[in-house]
Length: 506
Image (cartoon, rainbow, N blue to C red):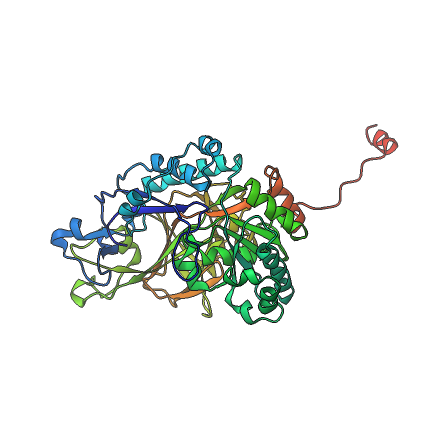
């Protein structure tokens, strides 16, 4: 939330050198740095650059503070187009000149990049629009270009709660660690498998002694803090396992190849029975990547105000605080937590017996006050999840949109709406609500929102890098919803008998 330089990080396929048994190879990172000039700062969400819990010195606000919401909605920042072009070149992770020429990228000097690395998260609306357009352009280009990666470290994610998948994980790990592979891969599996008898880590090491330094274990902290260590991710499970992988990588996501071992198949496109051929081809010849839109969600907490700053009657109005006329030095909200999601963010009534009252904002406009069991804000990827169950529209994952669907709205006229991904949504609990509401993010991290709190939803700068099968673009999504959901499936109408039709036409 601090004022500073915005950064978008991506990475190539090399492994970063370091301690704790990690590869000593040089790892290149790219930071796309955007210079802010925040001219419009709303005090209702004003935060300190150094200490977000401290009231800013408003006499020098431009130097010490940055507006949380209006850093998304307003401002004129640098155009990221040029540095996004550099990103195209770095994504491939190879020094191959032909690949470099195809992507039009150039390798940046790592020392220069590290000098520019700054901690700040939010983009202005103009910047969101520019970045969204460039990410879509890059995604479209990546769909037709095979990215050749230098893979040395593979991150395996196993479906939780299914012992049968652990055997498959063991099979893949043994194959990757075998001395017969052209590259001596480092393989990370989940920490819980270290002592699992079904996985049999000790037996794997007895069979392949050279794997002692290459079989490693990951936990949530390692995945969150050292994502740059991993060149490639392989998931074994269903769509829930892919969502869990997105949850693990809250910023940069390595390319994710998903084998289908679950009950759904919207995100798992590869047959596990051919895993050796699939992985060999991916590592040797390259992969096709689809960048899936994710949302960045920030929880904003209401600050208690001194009695002297309250409106007559001692009542506060969330709509007035967020888009109405602001006081001279009123700091009404502070940031609490930031989460990246792939499917949806849901605000609902939770265990409360009464329905939720939710204020819905888009940019600087108050859309409506929703009385319902809740509201689902979904990505195109999440359109086939809770959004579908709530009666929302299906959306192709390439659409740059935000889907808004009410859950059991107490009105017949609230229809699902589809908004552009450049808009900044806010969902808040009004101060006069009868009860609190609960927010969940991709079905995880359930957090209570008290009256006055709200959640901001905007397009994330960290898309989900989903590996696609070669040559299965086009109608693959329609085929999936037809197969999985039986979309528009019914018995065909019988044709009319020619004699009966002739009699009818007399």
